[in-house]
Amino acid sequence: MPAVVVVGGQWGDEGKGRVVDLLAEKAHIVARYSAGNNAGHTVVNALGEFRLHLVPAGIFYPDKQCVIGNGVAIDPGVFLEEVDELESRGVSVQGRLFVSDRAHLVMPYHILIDGADEGLRGKAAIGTTGRGVGPCFVDKVARLGIRMADLIDDESLSQRLSLVLPYKNTILERVYGAQSLSYEKLFAEYADYGRRLIPFVADTAQLVREALAKGQTVLLEGAQGSLLDLDFGTYEYVTSSVPSSLAGGAALGIGIGPQQISAILGVYKSYTTRVGHGPMPTELLDETGVQLREGGPRPEYGATTGRPRRCGWFDAVAACHSARINGLSAVALTRLDVLDQFASIKICYAYRLDGRETRNFPASAAALAKAQPVYEEMPGWLTDTSGVRRLEELPPQARAYIRRIEELLEVPVHLVSVGPEREQAMLLKPIL
Ligand code: IMP
Image 1 (cartoon, rainbow, N blue to C red):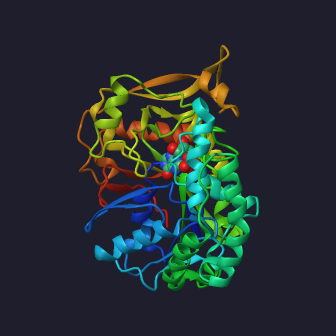
Image 2: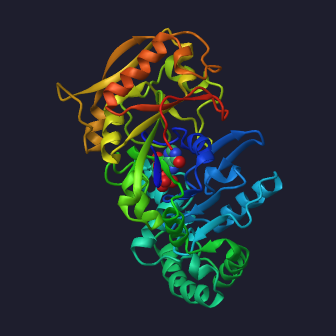
Image 3: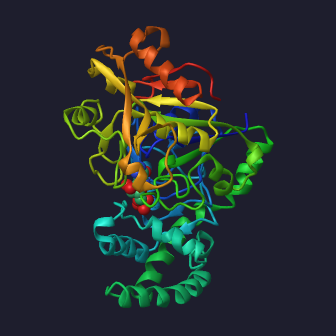
C-alpha cells in the first residue's frame, strides 16, 4: 500500500492525531504536509498525554520515521520546544525526524501581524489561533518567505533577513503603528535555531519517494478540517494553508505525484465542533451544546488555544461536502462514546435556506449563516460504549447511527473510536 492520506472532515479537531497514532503502527513514514503550529493534536498513550503542534503523531513508535514536509509553516522555536519535550519524556527523535529544506519559517513579525490584523478587522475578526501561520503563508505566495534551507546557512539567512526585515519593519511601523524589530536580535536568535536544526533538515520529498519506491507505506497527516480550506471552506473564516490541507494538497505539500496516493481516510467526530468565528449551522447554544462539550472523557477545548469549542449535532450536509472535495475512500468516526449520554440524537441531513430545503453546502459564509438545520432524529443508546472493541458489541442504536452516517456520506466507515486511549477503537474494515 503506497501513500495514504488522513484528513479532517469537519472544522478541525476531529481526532486525526489519535487515528494517525493508531494507524502509524503499520506505516514506515508518517508525514505532515500542510499548515503549521496552528494545528494541535492530542495523543494519549502509555507514556502519557502529549499535545503536538508540528511533530507528526507517528513519533511515538520508535521504529517510524517522521517527516514535516515542504507544505508546513514551521516556527523553529516551537519545533525545538516540542523536540525537547519529547526527548525529556523518553521519546527519542534523533535520526528519525526530518524537516523539509523547502518549508517556510514562521517569523516573529508574522505573529505580530496576525494579532494586529485581527484587531483591525474588529467585529469581522477570523478568530485565528494567533500563531502567525496565516501571515507566513501570505509571505510564501508574496515571495517574501524565509525557508529552512536559508535558516541553516548563516550567509543565506543574513541575505534573506536583510532583504525582508526592512520591508516588514516599514509595514509594522507605518501600517500597524507597531515597533520595528531589530535585525541583530532576530539574526542571532534564528541563526542559533538554524544550528540546532541542522540535524533535522533534509530533502524530505526524496526521502518519501525512496520509501514509496521500496513499497513502504507513507501516512500523510492533514492538519485542520476541510471546512477551513481556503477554497472549499467557509471563506473568509478559514485558515490560510498553501498547499491546502485537503487530500489534494498532500501530494504538493510532500513532493510526490497524486497517483501515488492510494487511499484517503476522512476523520469525522460523531457530532460537530468548531473553534474560531464563522458560520456553523448545527451549533447548539443550549444545554445539549454544553453536554456535548463537557460530557465526554475529554471536554471540548482547543488543543492549541484552550478556547471552548462550539458544539452541535452531526452536520451531514457539511460532512458530505468535505467527503466529495477530498474524494474520500474511507471514514473514521471518532468520539462515539460522547453520544452515550443522550436518549435521542439528531443528524442534520439538509439546510433550509431562503424557504427551500437543500443538501448543497453554500459557497458564501453569509448564506451559510442563514441556513437552518433540518434534522432527523434517532434513538440514543444510553449505554457506556467506552469499553467496546467490536462492532457487534455496540448497542443496535449505535450501529444504526453509524450506518446512517455511512449512507449520508456515501463512504464506508472503516474505524470507530470510543475514547482517547489507543485501544479504545474498533476497526470495521482494513485501512492499511
Ligand atoms: P489560523 O489558522 O490561526 O489563521 O486560524 C484561522 C481559523 O482556523 C480560525 O477559526 C482557527 O480557530 C481555525 N483553526 C486553525 N487551526 C485549527 C486547528 O488545528 N483546529 C481547529 N481550528 C483551527
